[in-house]
Amino acid sequence: MISATRHSHPQPPPGGRPQLAVSAVIFRDDRFLVARRANAPGRGLYSVPGGRVEHGETLHQAVEREVCEETALAIDIVGFAGWREVLPDPFAGRAGHYVVISFAARWRAGEVTLNGELDDFRWIAPGGLRALRTTQGLAGIVDAARRLIAP
Image (cartoon, rainbow, N blue to C red):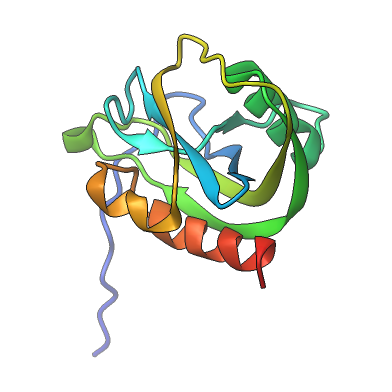
């Protein structure tokens, strides 16, 4: 007799579906930008700029818009650096389910001016992530982006 194992998954909130989001690992010279999240989820963790894709936007349009909104920077997208999933985790204060598409990018213009979603930023060398509390999976995305920038 074969028995099927059912996995128990929490029910999504009414109308809740996975959200598509984008992020950019932005390189300027030999450093890249990280910013600390000011709000939940991930409050106090360093990550790279990004956010939700709006209806009708391409992924490139979305990442350029999110970077500009969060940091006031203009970027040149180099390529696809990877993806990750952020699953609901009530213990970590995460109710949402996100699929995040990440890009490698080069700084083109502007100086960092943070919006209310972020409260600190740093241009750091690739090895500098180890000293920071970061969002899950960030180191792998940064490594993949760095390989695209300097193969």
